[in-house]
Image (cartoon, rainbow, N blue to C red; front, side, top):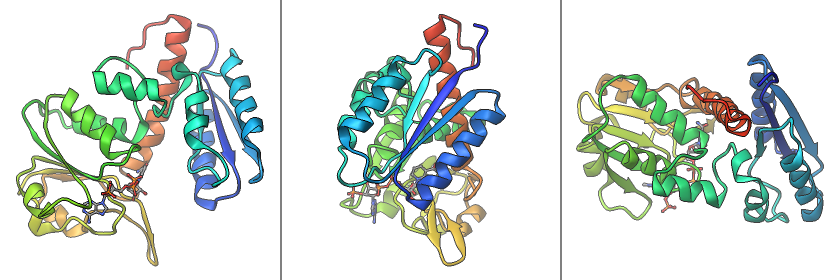
Length: 258
Ligand code: NAP
């Protein structure tokens, strides 16, 4: 369409982890040749001021994707802010319209971390249809959407959470394990079926650096295990760019071929 795809990332406040994510998203956007704009607002930004910025970005023809970095400071209503984003610019895939599109299995922007996890699985080349998949975690951000993507890919899906009895037994029959619980080394080697594919979504800050939700010893049993850092994290950013390109193609009426 003769112009670069445009992504706006909005950061409110000075949470150090969020600032790192926003910076790396901005860097990746520009490295891909896209138009990247970061809006860094003070921690005491009001709800009306944030809504006004979202409205402005919704109306900006150079912006195809809008991402408001979560979590927001406690005085702001995240649900109201995410719901204000134009669903067709909602590259985080968290707007209720996109949640509904995913639930119905119709095209729409998908949340980046779940989409990145699915693309990793598809990249292995084995058919996903009929595979037993166990998702550990049921958050709006990761567990639920990744489970829906797997159902849409014809896997047989179990979603485990903090009230699940005998998580190890569920993991033991899985061909695919997606770990998104936020507990360092939660999934143990003796839980995993030999040859299973294990996607470690967890990013946990511990004394020695960043670790995942999967014990590294799982690598000796699994057929494949994603590393932390360096696995799902970079895929999340790649999928943000992919979603931005998809949103731009839709807005311009250009075929999206990825
Ligand atoms: P979250 O909102 O805290 O959700 C954690 C989920 O784990 C909840 O559903 C919880 O169950 C479940 N859980 C907790 N303890 C459990 C247990 N003992 N057994 C089974 N399930 C248990 O976290 P999230 O946002 O989904 O993130 C999960 C992890 O992924 C975190 O480490 C986060 O940093 C990481 N993450 C990584 C990326 C990336 O780009 N790689 C992106 C997002 C998140 P209940 O619902 O019952 O409480």
